[in-house]
Image (cartoon, rainbow, N blue to C red):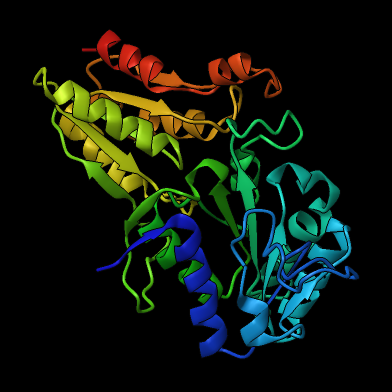
Length: 333
């Protein structure tokens, strides 16, 4: 099996689905080469190169460069999905959701419900999250907790290249709107990825490390930190089980509960928010459904309740990291 980057796996997923289904279209800013520009076509392939090369195979009618107007992109995508296409709309940074929230939150997420289950909205919104890219407060947030709270949306957070390809193919084939969140610092990470198309069902968590002493639930880039700490603590015979939900809506609560019932301890590491985070939501669910299994308080490892700093030393301190996670684990053992 070939080793591929997270970026390459996403590109392959898009190409697979565009070849398989002529109704799949891509739209967004610079997804081809910059609308109206005079330079090389396909000079960008999106801000991080995910769609590079696709315009040459599928043409400008299916890889659509748009103006810088997120509301128009999402409005067009929602309308396309309602009328039979399968749009993949790129929101350059998840931070920009405030510019285009209505077509997502008040329209696409509600179409199936408002039309009595008769309307399909096969829309994928690809967007980027994550601090550590030195992109300042307006381009570095991870607001997947906001998307998770909206009924009608499916929310996907691939942590590695293998999952990225399988989850994106599943997202494109899904008949509901999907928010697909790619961490900016994962694009160059690599994993073994099959050449052929495959799907990973939503709502099925992955256990990336097995253990009996403590459960760590981590999402997106935080999974790598959790695996790092689990491997380090294993040398001290502390067995950490790492659960990657992969999707926060639907959430595989059963796997989390099963793990906590085995270990009796839970630590959550989450980049989304300090208040009202996905970690806080999962902690509440575990407290409700598996309180008697807990041998120690639940610990949350979160960023501070501030905007993401631009100064590198402050940004690094902002990110929930391995040292804080390890300290939290040790505090409840």
